[in-house]
Image (tube, rainbow, N blue to C red):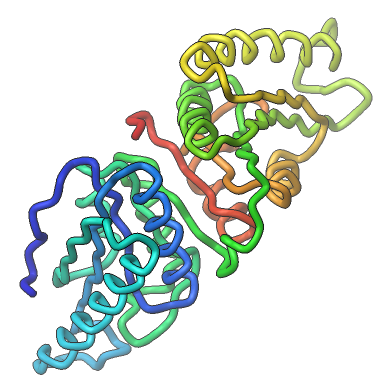
Amino acid sequence: MSGTTSPVPKSRIVVGIDGSAHGWAALAWAAEEASRRSRSLHLIHAFAPDIPMLGFGTTDQSSIREEGERLLATATARAHAVDRGITVTTSLPPGYASRSLVAASHDAALVVLGAVGHGLLSRASIGAVAQQVAAHATCPVVIVGHEGHTEALHHRVVVGVDGSKPSMAALRTAFHHAAQRDAELVVVHAWEAKGPEDPTLTTESSWPAYEGELERAVGREISTISAEHPAVKVVHQVVRSAPVAALIQAADSADLVVVGARGTGGFPGLHLGSVSNRLLGRTACPLVLVHPREP
């Protein structure tokens, strides 16, 4: 095992490994996804021996590396327990996890990691790592925030839209996931009105008018993508609700929630900070953050 990354195909799914419960759940989800999509897995466990939790000036890196190698060997065995046919490669790079995962995202289909991590070899709270990776990765990032994500299948994928280009990219990605899972696609747009009629609209406008306009705009996009996935049943919901609350509620009966990394309009502040800080670890299913480059 060296500090360099093993050669892997560009169709790989990258997984951050840290030994935490959420990290193992992320690995299980990624292995299932790799099996479903016939993709390879690349497992990364990064280490930075000069961090305070290991003691400043630490010179004995052999034990740290040996522990990392054991962790990656365990992770490989767990992935093969899901599907022995999955090609698994690993790397144990020096440095911080977020840097390695972002670098790996440039030729990855997905980067998958847990929302919260722990343990001596966690470079930071994995929540911070998740936010950093989601902010800077160049491919979709999947955040797994619950250990029991495989216990119940709803055959439903939820996507949050606001009419922005990133949310339309999220819609296209959500269609792909729904098609792969033989799942229903629920398209959710929420607007938090502060009065009988939404005050951010012009005085001549009304909620019914806004709702109708949005349904038509998103409906056109849905129709275009539906032609590529005719078997996917689509439900379009325009609701008066706080956007984050609407998505959290929808996640209770979903297998996946998909949102754009940034957005405007009906999901005010749907930039990465808002998504990671307010949805991270709060959805009852994995959360996918989509950047312009799709899988």
